[in-house]
Amino acid sequence: MRLKVALVTANAERVPAWAREELAREGIELVARQCRTTEEAVELARDADVLWLFGANRVITPESLSQLLRCAAMMRSGSGTDDLPVEEATRLGIVVVNTPAAIAEAVAEHAIALLFAIVRQTSRLDRVVREGRWGGGGTRVPGLLGGGVLGLVGFGHIGRHVARKLRGFEMRILVSDPAVPAEEMARYGVEPATLEEILPQVDFLSLHCPLIPATRGLIGEAQLRQMKPTAYLVNTTRGGVVDEAALVRALREGWIAGAALDVLEQDYVLAATMVPTPEFAEGVRAQVIDKDRTPRWRHARASCCGTWARARARSASSGAWPATTSASSRAGRSRRCSPSPRPPTTSPTSTSPSVTSR
Image (cartoon, rainbow, N blue to C red; front, side, top):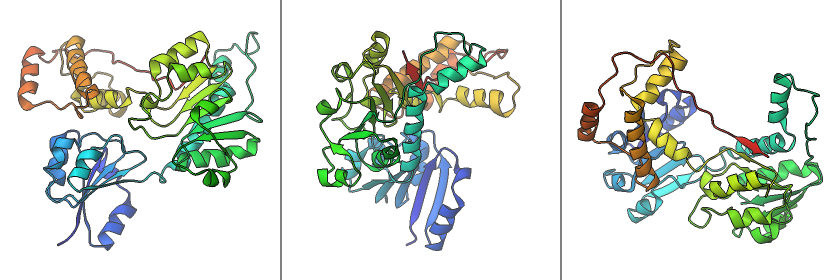
């Protein structure tokens, strides 16, 4: 019987040609589709031997796995498996794999770029120049990375790339990762230490550990208070590793000097609640594709959409991924919120802070 791979992706047209060619050469059938709901994903992969998830995607729920009649393996392109129903897959005998090395160097370079941005103040100084305020006084002198103490929490593929690339800055590098032997760390010229030992010493703390129950909220108030007021935090792993409320307080009250964040705790909640909606697609069409700036929203009032989004967010936050909506509930919502006869002349914009410092 011919093997079949079902690829759930954000854009089926962007499936790499080499992937199709390699699978075809081996006689493996590949079917790919953009799936926004669990039902769509199950329909695509019901008779597939392998389920391939391209990037972060929460359309596969624990309950849906039993409907994949032939699935023997589930693969995620990217690092981490926190968005996959690993426990249920294991119970059903489905092998779960990911590809952590595929983007390791890119993420490592991004972490270093964020570190430079926050320490050398490149983002802030760029704004100063663009606003014509250069030389106006009151500008803080950017710091230096060279000769500083770097702490790495997690020493997998990404952490090792970071250590290797930053050794040229003559930094002392401390690493906390109980899964990596000291002998292995010595090969990279780094020093093993516990998190408690690292925090008071580091000038820069970069997070590269997976999000698992043991690491959720790993960096909270107690840990931030142990850091020096001149220290910086960089997070390119998962938002849930950091207690964001504690981080906001730390920045406001000066427990640390700054933070550069590539991820937020609410990333997945926002993605699950906003991306699948017709409003999101219509906004992209009006703003990016057609550029007519006249989105035809389905909801008559913003409050209607907001109520629905909040309900989906609560569902997503409780672990019910994705926050799917049945046909009957969609019909009920349509009755309560009839389409607006006239589209608004403006569309909402959003901002996402990536670099914050005091």
